[in-house]
Image (cartoon, rainbow, N blue to C red; front, side):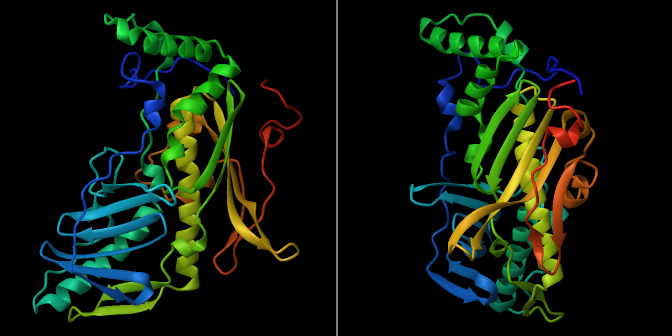
Length: 354
């Protein structure tokens, strides 16, 4: 395990002089959605929306919904209790996104009227939802180049000097390995705090300048649809139970994908050489009658190993098999609680950086 080294990526857009540091934590502006005149309930919690703009459908849980309509599939996220929310196209505008036509075959065009079109849209929503749940790891923030930020010249406008000084001071502290600077970056710049699709309560810390750690509460199994939708040869909507095995596989991939995404964000933000991520779920403690968070996945992500992964093509659960991790999962019973791994598991007999 090597000490931190200079990042090779270009300076992140929005560096010195680009704006107040806290502005990086903004919630993306909500986009204008469709207004439909009628909603129809479908099996499995799906909702079909009809209006002048066409036919749309959606599925999701509170704070996380995938939908499709005349403009294509979209992911909508809201922060319950805040009135804040945002939506984004699942069409893959970012390089790491997966295009919808790569994840699912195009729904057949209606040949016998509105019923077939509605069924095709409902199936498309179902497939897009499963794809969104298991592809969180495919995107990540652009890496910071802290050496470039420290070397950036002072801005010409006096109004921008204070921002430049803040970034320059922070970059110098990170390049010097100061833990206080690392914690400041995690407090003010952590991008995963605005990613409710991976879970909630994400807490990250810098144990050492080369080692970071994060814990978060992942969504429960209910985020996976209970029923699968498909089209019959005649274009009608068919529903059936997703099945314990398939549902478990999707949920396992969702948890693994969320953990990988958190790790990628940490490695992009700071020059850690390894990060450990602990994914937890809320469960009822029958002895106390309270919901407690238990760890179901604990994995280490060395920077060298992550650099050799093609995130667009991996199966997230399979990817963890190549990394140090603790996970006890079966398709029938789901996740069991596991002990969190630590430095002692990575460096037997050592508690410090070699």
